[in-house]
Length: 112
Length: 114
View (cartoon, rainbow over the protein chains, first blue to last red):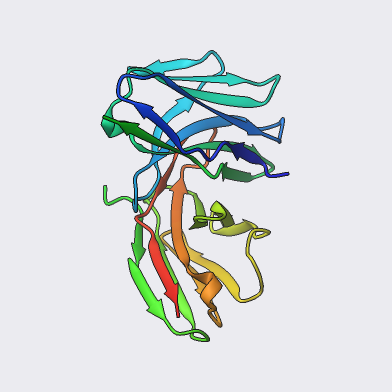
């Protein structure tokens, strides 16, 4: 079983739609969680961190469910510019180490 | 801040040749990661260093791959001998290595082995 799993998509949604991505992780001792965005032929860049209480940044909302070991990303009022691949990332840190593991990513295409 | 710097950006080499990828992390970051990305496997963690020490290399596919971090500002990933199935984008990322701190990626090296 992979440590971090995502639905690869693609998700094809019309402009203005709301879309949600989920990501599950296997290590219950994971401590930090992130969503990254990767544009075609570019490097991944941080979209937002995911906090235990949930957090919002404009049209984006991230949530964490530790009991079920998943994180989610909700995009409201989607724009053409939101088309990209979204990767979740999970950090396990302990005993002098810091391990950052990514899911394979979910591809989103926002259609006019 | 120059960010994470990788070189070369593109590399085309013949099967059997040695390939060396280079990475300069962000100054002050003490965790460094090497990832490989392909369509089939996504972003795979190959190896990561903490304070220049390799912590986990279980993601390195086989003995043909090796990585070093001789100092806090430089790391290399070497493939010897290279094979066509090594063709991928190789990313280096660095982080402060503390809880809730993000990792910053370099622009990647696109490797093609023919």
